[in-house]
Length: 242
Image (tube, rainbow, N blue to C red; front, side):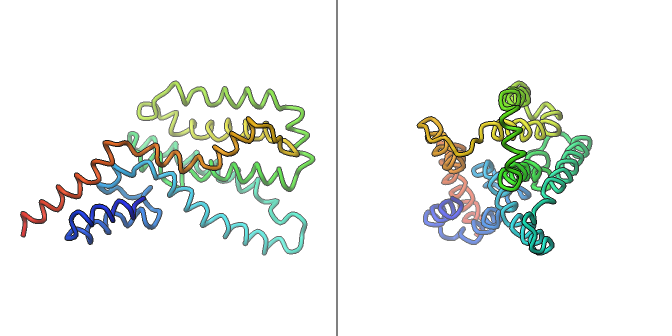
């Protein structure tokens, strides 16, 4: 998306290609969740893509380390639940500390990798139990399926009632409720073998394409127009200076 944006603007006004590359660099490096440029107003919603890509770079390194340290054991990843708890406590503490320092800021309170890694690692922990502790996992699912679903939904309710900009609760404890609630619902709805009825297959198909859908839906027509307008306005200023 960033390459297309830069390509279109550079075709319209070639003299600004260098500046466009500098503005696009955080997106090309998947670091847009830590840097704000004028393109943030167009592609700002892609901060979550940066968080995920950073996670996907570090996760294999962690898994390799656990594999090497685990030797030939059947379960080299048994430290994952402990690591998840450590991430959960550290990220929540960091979010609370950040909330006491400054009012809500997207890059500071919403998009930073070091405060959101617990959400992603929650999924890793769920599927660790799914693959390596199946008897325990499916016994828990069988016994607590409905309570887990209702509790998960209840934990998500505050996120729909409060505005993130006005409520430090949402961008501190709320993020924890989000992944715990979502994790309970996902864990409770996992079955073995997977059900192949059409509602499940339809939801699975949508889920497999959900991220690309969310990225495209975040770009409004008015913002697409801004891509062109920003380039034209910026290059006009450059022309006036010369």
